[in-house]
Length: 413
Image (cartoon, rainbow, N blue to C red):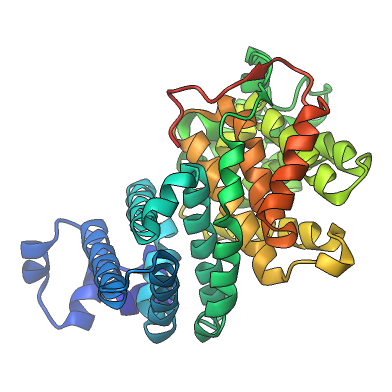
């Protein structure tokens, strides 16, 4: 399974190919696995369990929490470098294996979060759980990027920089973000949820198609989209659809592009009018959190449906993280500009936290994550204390103008 998934991609693998490569009969295959998916999940679990055992063995006996953490991350980087095929299945091809596999991956992330908390011991008790979740997501993003670039061994060479990024976030000052008053989103309206493109002008068939795609994907999932279904929902002809889009994936990506451009346009003025880079980053993140809370269609499409088996859609997520990391780095003060490595790690971490809220059904509460998301963006550049100072200062200035609210007990993390 590892060999074939890496060579051809999970979707192209068949039971016949598996039995041929493994030199067993189909009857023998079905004695052990009910389907190709079951075989993939068993392979995934095997890879993850071996990785966890290796990390535990490398950290056993070390009493210093930060040294245990360093050894753990270096071991993980070495595993990716030494076994890139297995790592690619667990970190890349898992997205192509469907919703069940992605859920399995989320549970794996929780295991690594627990491992990180155990390594830090008493120190982890002072770190907000969302921060630990973000750190694990950021490390996963970097490993995935190295695999996709075809240079997995670079991750082992990046081990010290990776650890530096992690430790830049493990600052005691992060505890000051707990209970920080933040702005909540206004109540959602049916219009925001059901008509993501607003009132489409008559005759604008492209906008009609995009709106229909957004509605269908949110209600029933990207996997259910077909050209006939989109056409019927939009009320356009096949000729009209083909005039604007090459297929379902092209149409869905155009929908994501339109919605994401609208989100950035909504938040960008807050950044441009800020006095400092740190102030602008926090303002923009706060505005994006409110926008996502009020636009559940975009939140679901960008942070849930983007985990579709279609490689083009998966690639959009990766490219979006790179674009955001480039913007974060480009606008930072020249004297303190983070490396692209650190910027990608931070954006990947923030993406993981947002996904956590959306996937757990708490997307409406995303505004309360703004201070933590801002800390993840700022701390690697400014240091933990300075990042928290900047965030607290923005909150105290009343940048968030709606009623303060605290973290609801029902929100995970």
